[in-house]
Length: 495
Image (cartoon, rainbow, N blue to C red):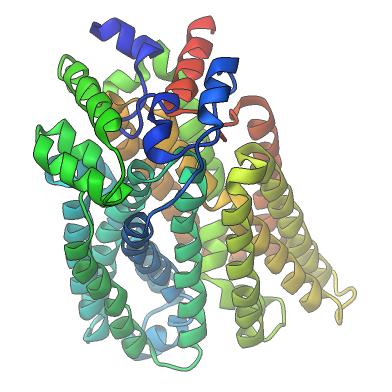
C-alpha cells in the first residue's frame, strides 16, 4: 500500500486505533461506525466495553497536567489586586502579566507535536511540568514585575505542551466507545483547576497560591513512573517488545492482545513508507476539510470570550456592581457539575448536539451580560443589572463547560492522520493560544472602551459557532478513526 492510498483515506487514521471492528476482541468495543455492515454489527455486538484499572490510572495521571493548565488560567483573577498592589502594576501592565501566559503557550504549542513524537507522550508531559514548576516558583518569589512575568511565561510554555499531549495520550490508550468521555476529562480537570484556584485564591494571597500551583505538577511527575507509555508511539519508534508490554499492561494481565498487536505492527510498517509531514503539507486539498474543522473550532472557541471571562471574572462582577467573591463561588458551583455532565453525555448524545447546545448557551450568556452593562449605562433597572450579569456569566460558564470547552480538543485528536498529527496538532494548538492571547490581552481595554459592546461581540461569535457546527462539523461518536478520516478526505476531494 503506497503513500497515495494512505493519504487519500484508505489508511488515514492516527496511530491510535487501526480497524476498530477487528480489534473488538481486545478492547471489547460495542459501538460501530455508521458504514459498518450487518456482519460487523453482529461481530462487535458480542463484545462488552471495558476500561481497565491501568487505563483509568494512566488517564488520571495525564489529566493532573490538565489541572495545572486550569490553575494557571484561573490564577490571574484572584491574584489581580495582590499582584498589582505588591508589584505596583497598572491595569495595562497587569494585562501583560495575565496575557503573557498565552504567549508562552504559543511557544509550547509550536513544538508540542515534535516533542511528543521525539521523546514520547510521557516524556513530553514530564518536560512540560518542569517548566511549570520553575514558573510557579518564579512567580511566588518575585520581587519585581519582570520576574513574575518570566514565571508566567514559563508556566505558559508548559501549558502549551500539555494542551496537546494530554488529549493525544488519553485518546491513544482508551477504547473507542469511551474515547470521547475519557478525553473530555481533560477539560473537566481544567475546569477543576480554574474553579479551585478561584476558591483557594479567595482565602490565600497570590504568593501562596503560586506555591500551591506546584503541587499538581509534582504529582504528575511522580505518577508518570507508574503508567505505561503509549503503545502506538512505542510501535512507531520500533520498540516492539515495549509496545507489547505496555499494551498488555493497559488491556489487563489475561487479555488477548495478539490481534491488536499484529495490527499495530502492520500499520506501523506501512507508516514507515510515509515521509515526515510538515506544516505546509497540511494545506493540501485532501486535508482542507480537517483543517477547516480543527482550526475553525479553536478560533470560535477562543473568540467567544472564554479567556476574557476566566482571566478577569472578578473584574466583570465588580464592574457590574456585584460581589466578586460571591460571583466567583457561583462560577465554581456551576463549572464542575456542568463539565462532569458533558463527560457523561459525550459518548451518549454525540459531539454535534453538545456543541450546538453549548454554543447556543454561550450566545445567550454573553447577550445577558451585554444587556446588563447596557442597562447600567442607561441608568435603567439598577437593582436588576448585577443579577442579570451574574446569570449571564453563569449561563456562559455552564454552557461552555458542557461542550465548547472540551469537544474541540476531542475532535482535534480524531480527524488528522498519523503522518499529519504532529504538524496538525502544533498548528491547531498554536491557533488556539494565539486567539487566547488576543482576547486575554485586549479584554481589559475592550471593557474600558465599551463593556456592553464587548459582550455583544462575544455573543455574535457564538452565533457564528452555531452555524459552523450545524454546517461543517461531523459527528464522530461511535465511529472508528479510519471511518472519520476517510469520510473527511472524501468530502475534501468533492470540494
